[in-house]
Amino acid sequence: MPTVFSPTGIRFENIDKRYGGLYALRRVSLEISAGECVAFAGRNGSGKTTLLRIAARLVRPSSGRVSFLNGGEERGVPPPAGFVAHATMVYDELTAEENLLLFARLQGIAEPVARIEALLREVGLVERRGSLVRTFSRGMRQRVAIARALLNEPAVVLLDEPTTGLDPQGASWFAQTLRQLRDSGRTILMSLHGESEVSTLATRAIQLDAGAVVADTRAGANFRSVLAFANA
Amino acid sequence: MALLSNTAVLLGKELRTEFRSRELLTTTTVFVLIVIVLFSFSFDPTSEESRRFGAGLLWLAFLFAASLMLQPCFLREQSNDTLGALRLSVSDPFAIFLAKLVANTLFLLLTELLLLPVFAVMYNVQVLPMLHWLVLVFFLGSLGVSITGTALSAISAQARMRELLLPLLLLPLLTPILVASTEVTAVLFDRSPYVQWKGVGFLAVFDLAFLTILWLLGEYLLEE
Image (cartoon, rainbow over all chains, first blue to last red):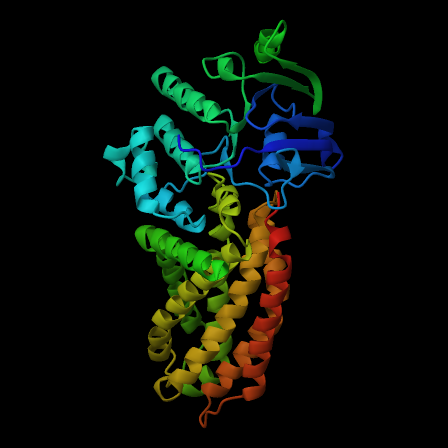
């Protein structure tokens, strides 16, 4: 993985998110250091997805603020973020290559064709580059989604249950990709359901329950129990 | 510059996906053709009668076309959360609106131009002498419908009763532009046709005003 990004941390300060009278997040305050690989665990509806979408700036918090840090200083301009969501975030009516070219052009990526070629090779879809995404299996679509998220060499990678639809071989490939991303110094936030090969790459585990942080641990004694929370 | 280049890229995507599937254009054209044919049975379409009712019927048919066309505009972006990916990728969210409203205007204009000869034959109306002015009125009217409809499509796509909400919001807001478009078109169908500049000016001002509102508020309309 090339390292043309600047290491970025994230600070969540007293984040509340309400949908009508329902709290999705309550007073969440976290500081994620640059280069950390954080796994969010929790049951369905615990607020993991909302927190990731707030970090991606797709959702505005009801109160509180999110800031991005570079060397301890707040960044004026938010960094490019790569986001893999529940949905694939790619167009079924376009080919894998057309999808990547569309987002590369929107993001103003220099030499998009070469970048797309490299990414398609990396995700193992170079042979199917000209096929419409709607003809792909769920796992193949997820690979396109991952390629799209990595197009702009993001400093921050946000992954919402990224192994959804991947077969064991695909999940293993993804774990390897994630390891490379983590080792290159990118900040990674991911939501997971239970332990997996991917979860073992986390350097910090945060447990959410009813929108609040109930456990926050770095690799150590109860690290695995937090990660395994969703299975409990 | 980034706004224009992003808009061009997104417009290319809109055109490519539509011309690949032809979902909107085919269904809308067929539907409006049926409407035009059915209307022709409701009265005797002599040229005198058509001059009185033709413009109204034509714009009513265009309104039906617009309602059909605008509904899936943002709904299609929701199934795979592609709207989220677009918001993460563009530097100015207005580019998303701009591309969609230009695409909608083009699709609507294409449908209208396909229907005009059918209308002229079935309703015994001479359109060729004033064709260039008709195209101008169709353009300004369709642009107004697309600007308003695209904005409302973004709002209704996030609502629970989305299929019902768009027509409910769209019809009252479009009344001024439909009235103006019908009046200007009716004068162009007249025995001694002329261009009603007051109406044309109103259409241009309406388009400009709603485009400015969309530019100012567009970002908030896309928020979850």
